[in-house]
Image (cartoon, rainbow, N blue to C red):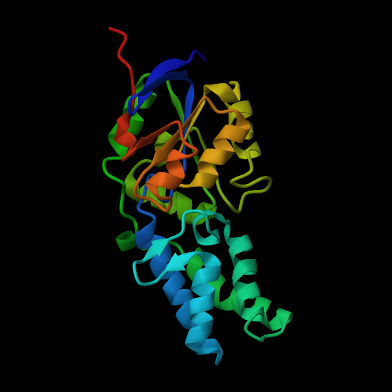
Length: 255
């Protein structure tokens, strides 16, 4: 397939495929994962006698500020797949005086069901108009993909709720077999599947790990979305360009 001219913000490049992160890029990150982390912490409190000091330690460990409902863009809650997050939380429980076996059991039973639960409609807030920009790129012959650390069931439900599930040629999730974000092999596998060089991919995401993955894979353009988990300053140090939402990624008319 031939690359087309695509403009992201004020940067223009030629590419065949745009790869989107999900949370923080297509849907609002904070309306999903902050409240779920709070519910998980409350479940752990109810199952133990660890107290408020543990909760403060837990939030620091996962990278979450309950006072602002903001997530640290380079922390586990923002970037780690769920199986890794379970280990992070189990470690915080262990550091509070619980044996490792019990800590792992508590993390698996109190955290995992809440974090992996299928999202409710009220949790799924799109980052602006997501359908039209995707359709426009498709109409110009660009292929589209999603790369997320979320599980496949939740990802499918969210994309379906937004009405964009049919826009993507490929979706890679955190519970799929094989490498997961931020392993650059995720992008390299998309490039192989679409039969294009990685240099003809554009990666779009809201975290530093998305941008670093993009650079390591040799993607042609690394686009940071502001307003997600990563701060503008964090993203600017690693992205080629920053935009506010995906409507700022569009094909360049040749007429």
